[in-house]
Amino acid sequence: GENVEQHPSTLSVQEGDSAVIKCTYSDSASNYFPWYKQELGKRPQLIIDIRSNVGEKKDQRIAVTLNKTAKHFSLHITETQPEDSAVYFCAASTPGNTPLVFGKGTRLSVIA
Amino acid sequence: GAGVSQSPRYKVAKRGQDVALRCDPISGHVSLFWYQQALGQGPEFLTYFQNEAQLDKSGLPSDRFFAERPEGSVSTLKIQRTQQEDSAVYLCASSTVGRSSYEQYFGPGTRLTVT
Figure 1: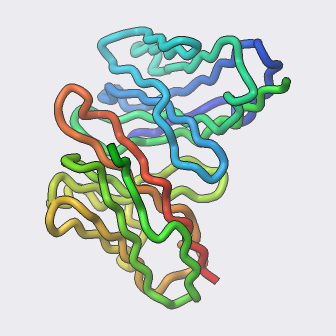
Figure 2 (figure 1 turned 30 degrees about the vertical axis):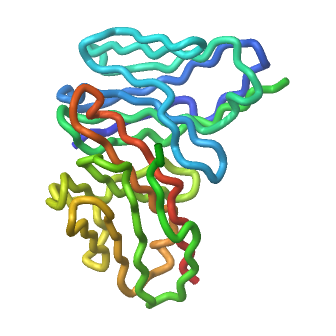
Figure 3 (figure 1 turned 180 degrees about the vertical axis):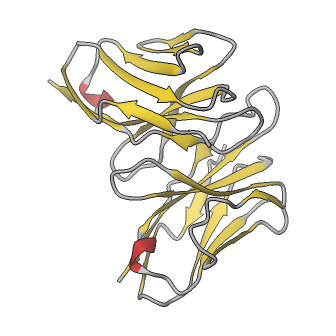
């Protein structure tokens, strides 16, 4: 089955700097790659996603890139703010409305 | 509109007790997923439904876990004879069909503590 690896497990950046989180997946059939942000004690919130027919997607300060050949995808957050501090999870799923396989998460701390 | 809701939000059970966790998906969402999230870990798949049909239950950790969605809307996850290793947050997510059919929206979770 699918296996999703996520790095780093923790990341500290200065406010205003960029943050990059990377994930790899194993199942070449996977075609949907969402990113979730989870604050302490809260539900995972979908922040951006990408499907395998595109290589990059951007939404304001957040972007995701996908390399299908290498089977990896990355989350880029620019101009980080303290409110970006949270745990971020990448995930992957195969075609159709199928379950997500999550990475282990990255705890991002943005230092003011 | 209303998002995914779950109840109870917190549950403390003595070892050996049975518990039932409820999920109310977004109205009209066809698919419903259950995940288990241990402390400091990512959510892990348990089971999912399309309407009332349970399509995959391969993630259920043991036969003490049972899920149902009899009318294709509300779902219940039942855990019999709870054990300490069942302590976790149980998350429910729902999704629709169509162009955005891959997007899963999560509920707030039920934090289960088995003592």
